[in-house]
Length: 112
Image 1 (cartoon, rainbow, N blue to C red):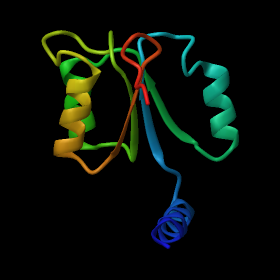
Image 2: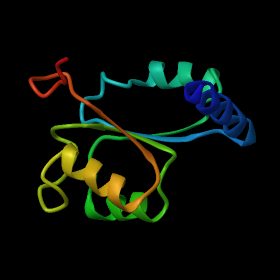
Image 3: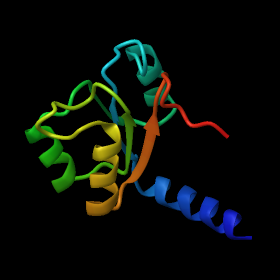
Image 4: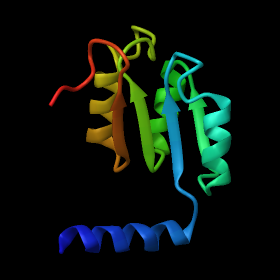
């Protein structure tokens, strides 16, 4: 019952305007231009692709957060900004209302 309600709410909200999505991954082949073009054709027109977060960009994201942020674990931040993607995820989760997704293609992937 609750899942159906959430799905209906999500569809209604998407009808109000395109979701703002930010992808932060230091590897260019992950979330590449072709993948982003396909997503944009499907209606996700507000995608920002970043490779590394510096202090200014992180401040911008905290001040005006995207609806969804997709973060890699390693290599996305300068050490003076945050230790890793987990630290950025924690900041975004605690200080914003955006939906946080964490990804990794290495030994840090989640195991069930």
